Length: 377
Image (tube, rainbow, N blue to C red):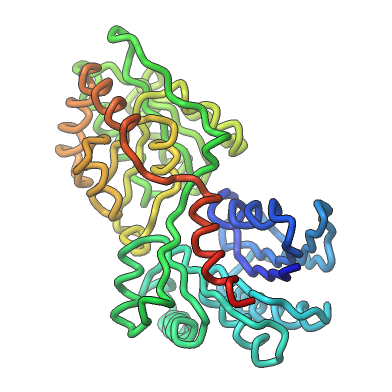
């Protein structure tokens, strides 16, 4: 029986923490313990230490926060990982830290002899994570320490792999761990009538860096030329700005706020749409290094994708004609939407997506690296 320990910070987003936990919960030879902490600007107000064994889950320790989560809460989470694990008194074969702070606490526990291997799972990357220079320096320092001393480093995108290579990490410890989808849970997009409007969908956290306002601006300028329906699923700090734009341009017949839905519900909704929206501005520096889960879901559902040229997967979309790559200028987005307004183009793209061969299943993607990591246990 392998004893696995996982530390992670979470938001309302499903991936990658919850697919990773689900992967281990479905393994009969694993005893799983995990600690989840809230990220800043989420509705989550507690840190919880769970144990999952023989299909039963229980809470070991729970700490509720009375104040809003801040950067300094993360430092406390680092100590929580260590103190709570030491208090539980178990020894673990593998500790996975999803981000450098969590992996660093795993390294401390390794010094105490409580874990055999520590894996640094890099779910995103940025050299300028925080505005505070001192905090940002400590963040980058801990990142370098984790890369040097953890047994393996998993990274979600080839761009982060390249960063790790430049940091001197050997290839045998520098492993790609791309994001994926639960293939059995996602509904495939159906074929569409040439007379129907082109149906666009966005799913995710609503921030300025996701570029939803750019799509709305472009639809406004094209609304007499193109027949679009654009549905937005999600919530976030930029929601009111989006509502204001819709009202300002009188786009209520074209753009609808569908609200926040459960992940399983959204996966079933994809079958109703033609194209997924995945714009990324550089307002958040980590967008350059990301591996967008929503794009993987769009592909798995058979949708085309309108994607900005920031993340690496945009080149794959463009090269294989699986959608439209664009800059974040309104003129370029207008040009792309004009192309997408032709239903024949959309049908061709959806056919290309159906024929595109890529392994998107979470279980396969996780299992590949886990078998390599666990082989010596």
